[in-house]
Length: 386
Ligand SMILES: *Cc1c(COP(=O)(O)O)cnc(C)c1O
Image 1 (cartoon, rainbow, N blue to C red):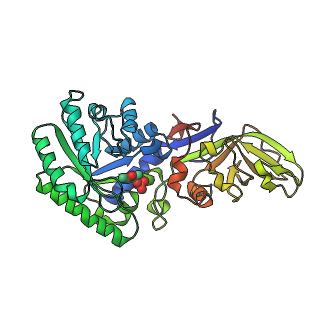
Image 2: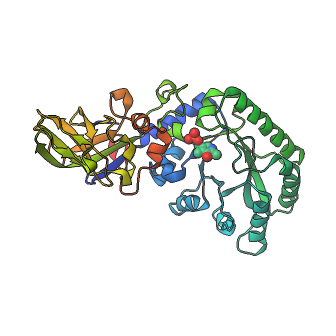
Image 3: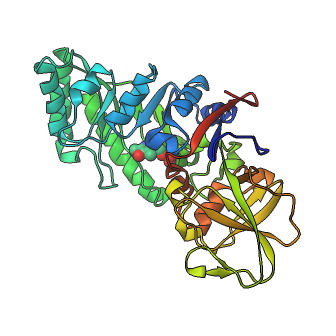
């Protein structure tokens, strides 16, 4: 979507609605599954939950997924009507609110199913509650333990027959450790699905794969996939990159140049003077820092930003609200008010979330999902700011 755009904000994440829709269509063609859950947890991996949800649904996803009930209710409040799955609940989860919002409640413990029924019995919400079972198949995280499957599925059948719940799905999640580990987890998942079917329940949503496995393991697609990172045009792994699949990055991160300063050889830069300029140079100050998700860890790693088409390294410590780039000695045209591009499209030679991840010794998921609330999210469609 680049080049750099004008912005009225100090920090702007432009969200390319066309790219997101393209990515949904590309994954739908690649996977050929009946249902796609667009995973929009954590503010849609930093992209803006409402913008991303609308774009994903317009692009052909038929459902959404988030971690928390609160994240799902926020989407309902924005008028989003599609099915929304959520699966991480506190002990005192407000299941009545979840039922009233017609959320698909992921059930990972037997007591959660009973708490859902109690919310209906209390009159706080009307039946039926929409249920999807999260089953534990290897990650040792949240999910019904195999020892509980039979009893819980039998109970669910009773509750469904009584009109209290509607069992809509069963799902689990893979570790991506190796093909063998994933196949072993899938085998456990198949066992869970059989047991659910044996209890007389055949829900429409049967899903195991997220972005990585969906592309890699055609046999693990079942009836749905939960796709997060791929819809944002980023790679789930190094084995099969976003570019190889034909995905386009959705987010462009910019920050405004707020000061330009000429300094002499030896001048210290930012806290602790971890960088002293080796010769006379010009520095530009950008209004973005670790509070906004620029990892302090990238300090001194030579990571570059792009200003007026050229690349300049970030130098010195990343501070809470500011980073400094070294423009070199021959730059006079850059001035306050210019926009710096921090994350863009690597296929256009622009810095990418992947570059940041490498510099910060982490993964692109962590980079984008930590982009903070001070960054304005601005949707762009057909080349125009919405
Ligand atoms: C976050 C998450 C996803 C999405 O994973 P991607 O790799 O981003 O596609 C899917 N399922 C579960 C359970 C998750 O926690």
